[in-house]
Length: 184
Image 1: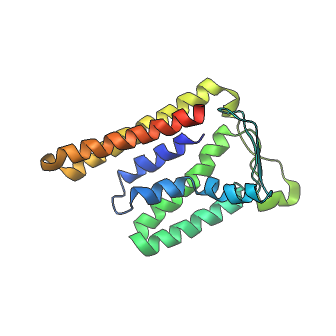
Image 2: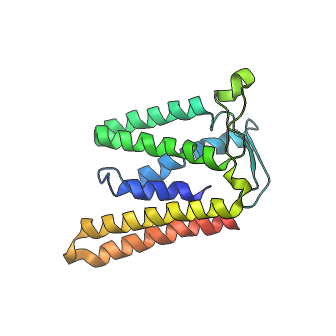
């Protein structure tokens, strides 16, 4: 799941207008952003390509405890900038990435960073059912797009309805565009 994470961010934006959409979009993908330099350094790896065919060895960026610590750090930074409610929203959006990954990943998510203790890896493996996984992802994107569109229409009011329509349409194209990219 790649695009579905963005759907969560778009949906949350509708209820947290104080947090800019860019902050929500970055926070929902933060674990993958952290993964990139770790992969480049050879610390983490990704094998396989195509929708749901990847085996990810992300023992630091996607560990349960590491994910919680990063979500708390994002929440604290967000609270400093956008208040308590904004910080909580950012922390929850950040951690939602791990929850969604738990649902779709094969067992490749460790509890502790570096898989200290060599505990069993977690993952429910929805990716092994590509159609079901795609349906869940499309549902997340649809909910995110609908909620974001409703937010932009409310925010811009009747005098600036066109601005709200354009913003909502742009987000919808972005959301479903990321899905198309992940399917290629």
